[in-house]
Image (cartoon, rainbow, N blue to C red):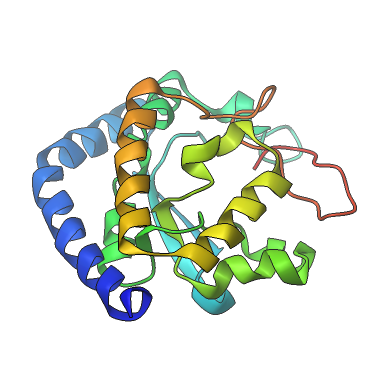
Length: 208
């Protein structure tokens, strides 16, 4: 019952409160992004949502569009600005995702939304992570975030799907606050964020 009705009610209440409380801060961040990184202010990208349905995730932009002589985007670590890195460390870049929560595309708690092209790389067990809405934070995020392997992340995601409850969501939200304050697990060693997931039988490569 909670996963069908209760979580959505919690999402609506807290996302509306969050957008109201953090509205002035979001405006300040938006102005700083425009000044320090440039337009567009927001980063929009298609991600996989509930039941594998794509949706457009919204974040504050943290990277430039710098390209090489051939017109290809430079690696993430070369496009990440100092201000963008600060937004990532503080998780302020994710404030616009409250709009995704309000629209019902995401929940406050759930597996993080990943790239659409990852769908072809999941095992059937890993694909079960899409049985629920993706979240701003999740069980994998409070158990290592980007400092753990993809396989560990997906195992945590599937565990959450099987054990979803109000108490678990509240526990994750509380632990997320502490994690954000500690700024832990933000990136994988040697990468701007996390290496790309190439599938269960492949090794990860470039960050995305």
